[in-house]
Length: 497
Image (tube, rainbow, N blue to C red; front, side, top):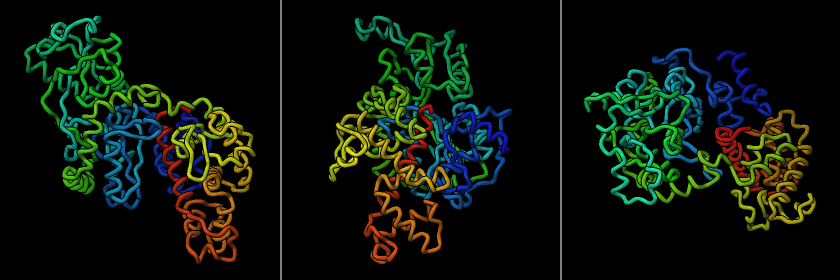
């Protein structure tokens, strides 16, 4: 992607503060990828299908880079936000894989799934993880790993209008229970999906034509299921796991009629990445014998209570469209800071998991976990009141922004502010003095000030002559900054600025 195109996409995404002020690739988890692949959240359409690898990036290069880049899309099974946390069956598997490989995980969202294999072959990601069925056609473009799931494709159809007043056998009489009954009926599926190929084969198997209606690649399976539930279309097809999740939300749909035998769901890599493919396959073979795999599978495929709970929640990214119940107040306060509200939301989650009644062992309380003295100083009279707490916490953050105004880089300044919010600016100042004393950059957080903040738990460093505030358990503020910015990357995927 040339510089002009990158700049254009960044402007369209409306980034509220600059991340690329000569930071290097370790500033924020995923930031280098966002700089290289600006627009992945809203990818530019590819002019033609890219079916051959354009880059030579196998596992050794990925390990040298230090991060695994996964291409995926919003899905009730692959990747979503629930109660402030990124979740999803494939997302959690990817996290396990990245940990196994000793890599960070970067998620790149692809909204037009027709482009996903082209983006892989162009080098915008290392792996595709999006509920992908292995097909002969797809194997001409990519290499599939061993499957992680076996799944059937199910017909999704709407129950009769008065189904609540009907008996089960009366409902069944009005529904399609045999694929033969689809002859001459319209079934809407996403363009380029395995559902289309399956319906073509099914038409041949049943000896009659199904009227297959293709919809654009940026229309998700979840949206098609919603259209069935609203009566806008008659039928669609979904993988069984996706259908189950959506049936927990749309109570007026039926998903009991299979249109396929069990099919393999697997990840895809470039065909010139054999070492990555082999490593994933070895890891999957071992994982399938571990309890963790069964726990994850049951959580996302068999736990109907979890399906119902998450789709009913306002903070489930596919139905409620909110990060938290306090989004509006967070947005108002973030505006006064000049911050992206999703960054402040990530900090609120880090502090309280969006629980206004949360209390710490040290006496801090509320959404931003204010100590009573700090709350009073910055004007909060009711520490558990979301408006009071966020207002006072924001004033404190603004004070810290002014305190660190001499840090020249805006992203680094935010890291200093977050670290100070957690442990106090005195400890951070100590770490800066140590950083300067030992010949490193006191205005740079990662690998510089953060390194010496970690060392402030060691006697040789907290007793150093330049240290004024003594011992600090530096691991806590360093992780605090890292985790907030990591979660912020996920929030950017799911919520509009």
